[in-house]
Length: 340
Image (tube, rainbow, N blue to C red):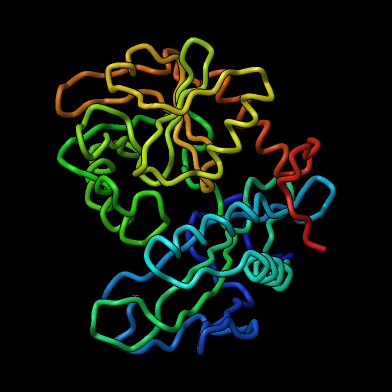
């Protein structure tokens, strides 16, 4: 391990590591995996990723477990999701086998940057695919670059596992109905920047978006999915414009394992008055408990955490998922890939 890094005080930012891995799609096929120490790419000024947004990415993590082994969480799910993103914006899909091999390789090459067990930090893995063909016509590229970089990171939310307040603002939409919301494309995040910065300036950790068509139902929570506990059930919005979160999928399975009923459905905004717990969930934070949801348009404040503490179900799910990632509990669903 890198002895110079202060593992317990890492930000959720970029720290240079030793290597990244790359693979090019040219002449109708993927080439050999290349190992690089360069932090830059040589890109044509007319590349489709620069002009027409042919760019998709993923986010996953590697953890050093209690037994010292390095585990990557739900690698195959990320591989499958980036394929769906590629199909969605007419890019060449990266085969699951190639994705898996490259993730394993880049983690192994940078193993000294996997934070120690107990530090609360992890190795963030960022796969990225871009269109690199030089063209000015609006059409899909013929050539692509798939690369994976890694960086050790601390917790996404500096506050740690405790409730933060989020807000609703109807003046912003994250994505359009039937648009790119279900795929992990950079444009979705660009569209969320203004709302996110406004929310932060007002003291909120994130924006809880409403459905872009009717503004009646809950959608995503900024860069994460949203779930709530109501009457002992785990409820989460169902929508074609929501990115299917692998963390949310995992938490739903763990909830079922605990005997908790799960409902993925439309959740009207008024239902927020009746929920017992809520959280934003995603790779970066796992679960970020919500204390209060303020509707900035109506002035209604939905107080979720009455005592300023995370709810018991959210806490149990968070602890269970973290324990599986860190090798503290049996991985009964086979979610971890151990890096030999």
